[in-house]
Length: 403
Ligand SMILES: *Cc1c(COP(=O)(O)O)cnc(C)c1O
Image 1 (spheres, rainbow, N blue to C red):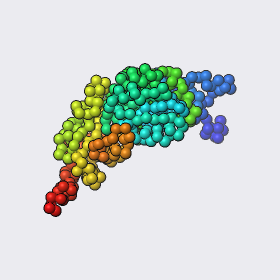
Image 2: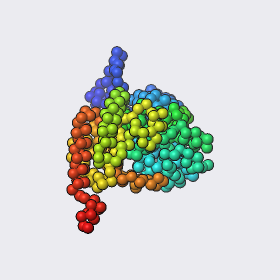
Image 3: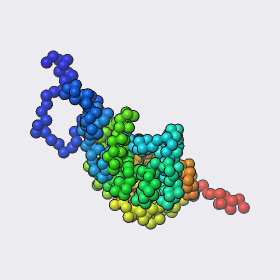
Image 4: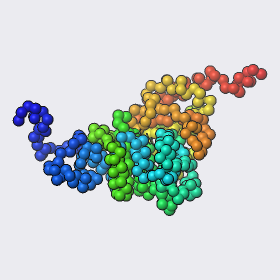
C-alpha cells in the first residue's frame, strides 16, 4: 500500500480476544456502508441503528442504555446539557396554541426559556405553586399539553407529589415531565410514579466530576421516544462520545458518591441549623422542609445538596464574608467531588408565590472532603458574618444611640 493510502486507512487490528470492563470510545461522523443498497436504506436501521455520527455510536448506546435502565424507561436520548434536556423535552411535545404548567420554583433558566422562547412560538406557560398539587385541578385547561415538575425546586427545595400531579394531569389528557436532576434515578424514579418524561442534568451527580455538560430525556412510551429522537436529529442535536465516556465513568461511582456526600451533608446541616446567624436550613430530612412527608414517602435518601437561609441582618454581609472560605469553592453547578457554595437570589424568580424570606439563599453542594474540614471552613464563615454584623449596628441600634 502506498504511504498516502496507509495514512488514511484503518489498520487491520484484530478485536478477537479483546474485551474490557468499560465502554469503548467510538468516534465517528461517517459510518461506512458495505454497499450502495445498505446506504440507501440506512434509515430503516431503527432508532438504535448506526447511520451517522450525529445519531450516535456504540458509546452513546452504552450511556443511553444505562440511564434508561436506571430510570426504568423505554428510550433515553442524550443532549448537550441539562438545560437542553428540559428545553428539548418541552419543544418535542408542545406546539403553537398549547399551554404548559411550570412550577414557580423551577430552575431559573427554564423560566427564562418558557417566558422568551416558548411564548415567542405561541406556547403559553403558567407558573404554579409547587407546594399545592390541588391548584393544578383549576389550572389545567383544554389546551394544557404538559405539566412540568421539578422536585425538589431549585434552591428552595419544595418536594412535589408526582403521583398526585400525574393523576390530575392524565385525567385531563396532559403529559407530565419531571426534572429529576437533584435525585438522580438512584434516589427517585419519576417514571415509576407515572410521569411520561424524566430528564436529568447528567452534568451534576451522574457525571459527578465538574468536567462535562450533558443531559438526558427518558420516556415510558417508545413512540414518544422515537418522535423525540427524530426531532433532535432534525434540529442537529448530538453529543460527543468522549463526553459520554466521562459520564459512564462517573456513573460507576454514583452510588458511593451520593451516599457519602449525603451523610456528610446531613451531619453538617444539623450543625448549621444551630448557628446563631442561621435562620433556617432547607434539608429534606428536616420536618419543616416543604414536602418533607413526600420526600420520606417517595425518595430513598437525600444527597449532598441543600440550602441555608441566614438571618436577615446577616444577608448584607454575605458576599464579603464568603471570601474567608477555603475548602468550599464559589461556583455554579453541583454534584461534583469538590464542595461548592453559591449565594442565590430568589425574589426576582418568583411570579406566583411571592418569596417572603430573606432574598438570599446559600446553596451548598457537599463534595468528598472530610466533614471536619468543611465544618471548620463554615465556622470561619459564620464567625466572619457575626463579626461584620457587630461592626455595623442595624437601624434600630443607631436610633437608640441617637436618642
Ligand atoms: C443544573 C440544572 C439543570 C441544567 O443542567 P446543565 O447541564 O448545567 O445545563 C437543569 N435542571 C436542574 C434542576 C439543575 O440543577
